[in-house]
Length: 52
Image (cartoon, rainbow, N blue to C red; front, top):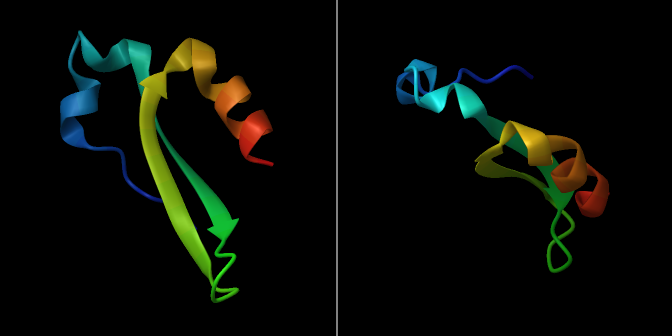
């Protein structure tokens, strides 16, 4: 499922950041939910690898 990036991230100062969505399973209910974060482009792979 694709999600749109917030328009404020497309400014000249916002090009160094990315909005990342990651699907996680809730330990209480077992349902899946989206976890989102705005992080620097350098940290995207690190964020996704530690979430897995």
